[in-house]
Image 1: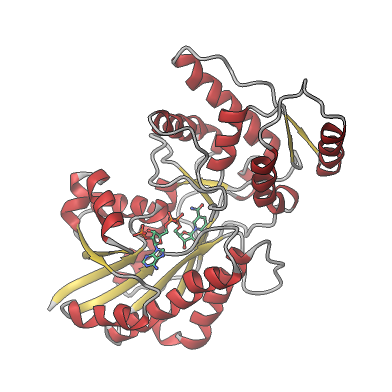
Image 2: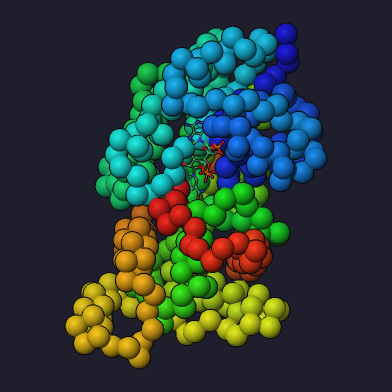
Length: 364
Ligand SMILES: NC(=O)c1ccc[n+]([C@@H]2O[C@H](COP(=O)([O-])OP(=O)(O)OC[C@H]3O[C@@H](n4cnc5c(N)ncnc54)[C@H](OP(=O)(O)O)[C@@H]3O)[C@@H](O)[C@H]2O)c1
């Protein structure tokens, strides 16, 4: 029989990859089984992961939307003294249909909870969710928020035996020192818009807070929760958010532009064009006027692209409801200390790639 085991779904994603690094750095507390959706994502992860991670993670491939195949994992893994399942996998698109979001977030959670039950009576379940949603008294801004909340309700109602704990985080950006992150969701498509298209105007409430957190801090907080669960110590729900220290949209955009300019200057490029945030009502008026008068002097990005991207962000630029931090071990580093690294890493990564925006619906 194996000793303690952590079964991590979504280990190939932005949060899962950060968690794998922290767990590997903390030493062998438990066997780590990492679940990938397919061979390709497994190979991509193994190709970019540091040796310490490759040495620790035992990769398995499973499409978690497939209930019987997911349950079969319980027979394939040797019995363990105690298993903690940390369910990180999700469909993080902000624009998915309700059907696709339910499949990725509710059906998959149910399948993984059934697997957890089959792994033994001592198994505990840690669900990774979003600080931008809640199970009660919440008006959902998209299908992502609605289905993450539905998954949480399902766990609490139908799987109390797994003693589920919910770890909710706000928008994840790169490592606080290196800027590194496995995938670019959340604020990165916005960064792509600013860097590539240099719009002179963007809509948004300057004073709305955009709660961002660096991936290494999130991963360390999550690893703490997992360690307590492995020791069978009491674990409470956690909200890994930056709360009142989060930047306002005006500060975030100005900070991102400064960071872009510094990175551009280092490679001999001109700074990005000056960018002004305008309220949505003024934006709509300006957009209509630019179209009606066919103004050429104000160079705006392609209309369809801009409308799609603004449509994705609008709910968050107008309504900044987010859960306050709770149950965290250390306060989140201040955004001004890591934004440069996050922007610099992203810019360096995209330098060698085709000049296309990241998937605009993915945010988490
Ligand atoms: N990133 C954020 O800003 C953010 C903010 C708040 C909360 N969260 C939460 O954090 C968690 C991780 O998000 P993330 O940003 O790391 O997302 P991500 O980068 O898109 O990763 C999602 C992971 O889910 C896995 N997955 C999706 N469908 C699967 C399936 N059918 N079978 C097996 N695996 C599947 C993917 O596996 P493969 O890589 O193998 O395809 C991927 O590793 C989610 O629960 C999300 O709700 C994220």
